Each structure stands twice: as C-alpha cells, then as structure tokens.
Image (cartoon, rainbow, N blue to C red; front, side, top):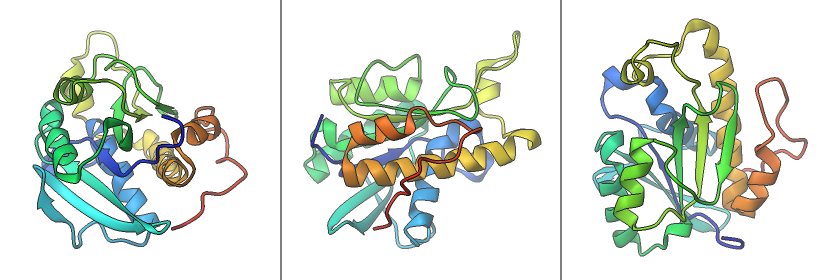
Length: 209
C-alpha cells in the first residue's frame, strides 16, 4: 500500500432526495465537501458512468476521479467493479468513504484494508473486487439506542445537536482525503486517525490542489 496514491475516491450513499443528509450517506457528504474544497461544484459537470455519478478533477498535476454510486449502498460493489475495469485500476488505488457504526459521532478512521465490519456496502465491494485490500475512510455515526432498528437509524437524518459536530467531521474527512491523495494513505492515517471533534485538525494544513 505504501507509495500508492488513490486514483479513485468512492463515497457510499443512497441516491435520491429522500436520503440526503442521512447517516448512511456520510460518504456522499465527504465527497461533496472534498469537491467544494477544490472549488468544484458538486452539481456540475459530473457524468453518469459506472452506475454512478463520476467527477474528474486535476489534482497535484494528475487526474483524480470521484464516484458517487447510484446503486444504493448495499449494491455498491457493482459500481466499483465497473469503475475498476473502466479506469484500469488496482484495488489499492481505490479509496472508499463510508459510514461506520463502530465509531462514535465525531471520529474518523483510515485503514489500508480489512474486513467489512458488518457494513453491507463494504461487503458488496469486497465480493465484487475479490479482495479486502483497498483503503477506506470510515466516518463515525455511532450506534442506535438499544431496541431501535439499525435500518431506521442509518437512514435517519442527523439530530440537530449533532449537526455542528458532523459538519466539522465531514470537513476533516475531506482534508484527510486531500492528504491521502497527495502524500499517501499511510501518511493520512498517521495524521488523522487520532482526530476527534474535541481537537483541531492537525497543525499542518492540507494543501489545495
């Protein structure tokens, strides 16, 4: 993994206005924030490709692709497999951004690979790619209260008290993507895996493309 820079960032989420700003759409939110940090409008000129919405940007002198699958989270692997073939990538060049119930709200974590942790979107991707050796950035959404349905929880919108926290988390995750794409996933891990909502972002600010 060391020395391999992401060529494709994939934010997981469900398409449609009824799912906007829900917990399961944390991946979409981070990709939108990353594009905004690059002064690239999320509404514009993406193209429909690989069963998703594809954005191509110039980043640090090279082409960087961002994909928001339109397959629903549980079938994300279909879009990832198509993008891998179409762009000629190896799994280590694909960085997936998704929500994570095992992390509390206010935390992010980057890993170079590993299991799905029960996340159906990651399960679909692992099955489609035939490997779990692709980097991922997880955004903590916490767990539902005992007795609550997991599906209802992940498809719910953020509570008003969480809104300012998740806004900061999404921005930090977007900064982490910038660092990963410029310096590598391992470098981003070392800088951001200790980040939480009670701390400022690392002292060295992420450079803009």
